[in-house]
Image (cartoon, rainbow, N blue to C red; front, side, top):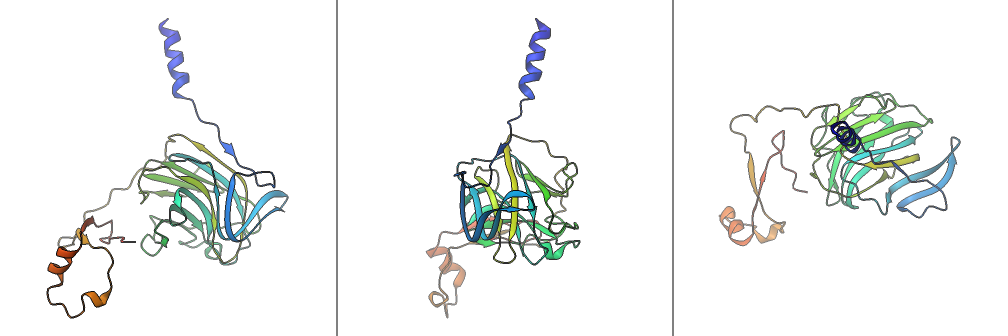
Length: 261
């Protein structure tokens, strides 16, 4: 009896939710596509989605942790295209995109959060958010995004070795939809899209950062936006703002800045 119980336990803890494949064809109604240009087409021998200037979101997806996979192809011209997850709406989501025109350079790709419609690539840049890779032009390349808790790993071409470890997903741990994005520049082609839910184990480990330098302001009081004419010529601005507006205490992020988007 003891052996049977042990075997049942092993089986139950190794269950993996099978990946859902979302095809690109005229019969599929699971995609919500809002883009300047898009079409279902055969590209490089595959049923695919051409996307430019917008997004394609899986309508019925509810994704918090798990794996997103797709194949991507592009010409190498300037563009910004990739995957989105924990999508709340068109202004709030997590985003990883590729820059074909920067192939082989340290900023060939980038993770960024989008808050209230504001892309924050200028704040979240450098080795913690993107890395160099040489892209294949006009060829299908596999991409895998593995999300677990507050972190993620990105794979491109080599699906066994992560290209990038994202230490901290800025939207925090929440569920949302999954999908694909492409900017208004060069189009991207996507095929073989699928995703699975679960709590995958990441190969990398969160980075430990040094404390901010002594004297760094670590907490800011943030007010709601207001017009300059409301305070023009005022001598005691802090007292006025504190009296009129509810201030939100906001700690700085690594690097000493605050994202108030």
